[in-house]
Image (tube, rainbow over all chains, first blue to last red; front, side, top):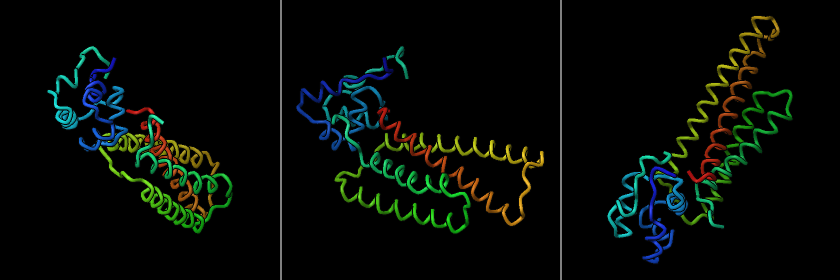
Length: 71
Length: 142
């Protein structure tokens, strides 16, 4: 299990936002959104806050840290 | 396709193709390399890169690069640096060994050209490793 997990895919689906729309609003590429959603890339703190802000949720609802997870 | 190519990724594939097309024949087909051929190769790679990168830029709507692109770029440069450092140590070690044992007896006018080829080869290999490492990183979605 990765050290940082996220609920972006679920939150995005609830708000009917596409990966491209989220990427445009956050200022990253769609490939980066895909990598984050697949838990393959942990974004910077700034990007994580932007994602949470665009999805309209507190950051801890969007990203969770698992100390036992693999970095 | 679930995971389409980003602008940076397309650009890297183009760089790898240009490097292999220009450097490949130089190192594997030419037995007598000259300064003119080295110069020709440098000009060729520059021209080919300009053409390919212009085409990619023209046909790619979104040319955004982000933090992940920068991270992958740094990984590529690290791999390239480790490669060239290793090749330098191995190359200079081999040169010292063969010179000390008397295997190499260069004509003085050929020494410069020989070194040019060896060091240019090291640069080329490290550049290809750098580009390939970045492509692998993109494919593994890190």
